[in-house]
Image 1 (cartoon, rainbow, N blue to C red):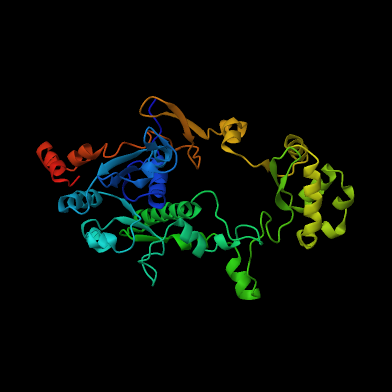
Image 2: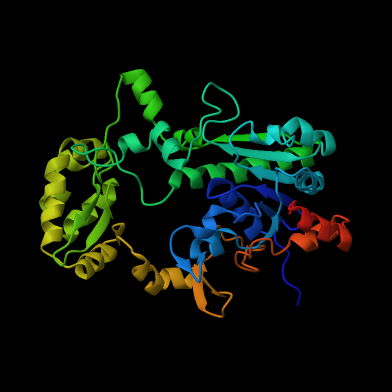
Length: 399
């Protein structure tokens, strides 16, 4: 029986990106069947190949971020390297790039140059501050986007400076917006007979778009949301608590009926029936009292007992998972959130499963991140370069 076609099969995507935002955007497309051709510098390739934990000289993160992609090398400073890339893009449906605005234009690979040869091209441009505005030429990584977009200001505890999340969340959010924008632009072409267009994603705007009610609350009430630690302001109780055995559990009992069940489960029927705590406004007004009570209860019980009691009472709760917890968890396993793969030397390892889960046309991993330039000669040949021309490009340092 033949394999079910993936939903993006037939799409050709060229990636001119490094590190996180651009490559994560194309990773999503590749996981669901698009042919992604990643263009890298011959001089070491994407720096992500050397980030975080290395196995035999290559980042384990690389093998995940570049799965299902083809790697070709091209020297954009060499005219024949640029010509190779231009020919690649001329046949592409989508181009994803995360250079600083103006860089591709210097290489004559800007939007006006590319759409002249490929009017149907969708060009996803991910940058710190977008393609317009007074900051457009400034460098901006995810950390800057998280700061300008408002996330860092409200993250942490009020008596300490702002903190970051443990991952480059700004880059990843921008990547998701980029993938969504690319698919919307393709849909426009298919339904309305339109031409291609630019999808302009600024990292700070990608984060800003996630900031819930921050703007209207300030504009209407003059309210500036500040850092509040692990609680969710205005929504009580929702917090992380320390257990007797030194673990941490997150409890979200902010629904009215859920709060009543929670209080009864821990032997506080009096608070379950307290009319002053019957709704969120009342609970939030007595936030310190409520959290002190929950802290005290958790401090008297071990993690396993707390989770058992709350599960029986149907109160949303969870341990704070580490990788150790994830790999042993039956929910992760049942949902196939780990895939098995093999590193180049034969070492078996696990990598994250594919999200989201499509019932009829699921994504998958065909191969892990490729060696630098692994597909260069095959892609050149497919574009019509013969063996002599390919050898000449290598000798000239163009690829």
